[in-house]
Length: 328
Image 1 (cartoon, rainbow, N blue to C red):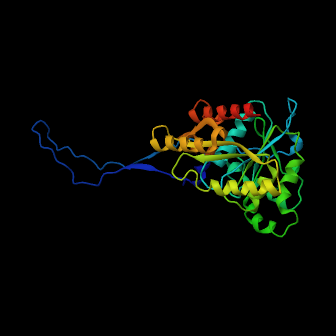
Image 2 (cartoon, rainbow, N blue to C red):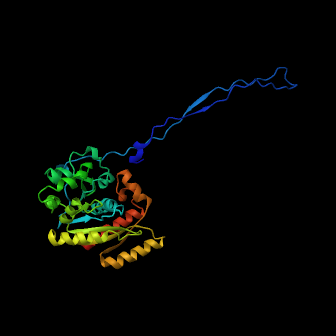
Image 3 (cartoon, helix red, strand yellow):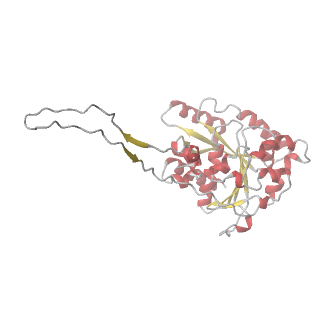
């Protein structure tokens, strides 16, 4: 059972076999002297034995000091923002599963959940109500970033979680000094400790997203294989160019990822052709399929590589992780 178990109502059922009282039935038979009378049927109650419900254990909230020792030498840290102003394109799914796949390949990965919905946090089994500090406190309350990191959520994967407090950050950042640089200053102190830092961005182009654009070295843009796939990407590219000109000269596109691909439909194939012709070699060869398992995995608090390791979704993100490593 998944995290939705708490939404189910407890049910107690019992089957009752009853039979209304009837007139005694007299059977006439020449072989018997007396009539046979059928008595009232006794009420019988049976208990239904329920299957034991499985509870998913909560991920332990450890401090950064409790992090397992790193087994390899960290090279140059690559900071990537997983970004698309359009919602529902697979940003959080990609953030979770790509990070986990790289972690299982021996890389040290930090996932920064910058979306007020906190889908990357809950999708990895982090109970947000048990979190003392989140990325909001780093941006606005000057809490050291090490005090917010939850280490070893999965193999090789640490997380900076998000809570509902982040919803007010857009407004509160407006009056802050150096408001666009808050995330870059925090993430910059972690360079050399991780191979990859991924930032899961909100579906908007507000101040939180601008912070991600300033903090990142490169952008990873998920695009769904559906109608209007490129809608909004033009505005995102315009924002990227403005940030690159004024705030972050090194910012560029690392790769474009096609998600929710269904090879049975002509539409998906047409979208792939259109996106490849528009972005060229920046598009990853790996296509992320539309599968039920990918949708189910977050409700179990697991990446797809743990929830369904032999499935198409897991294999796709493993292939994507290999491409990311090969691109350097």
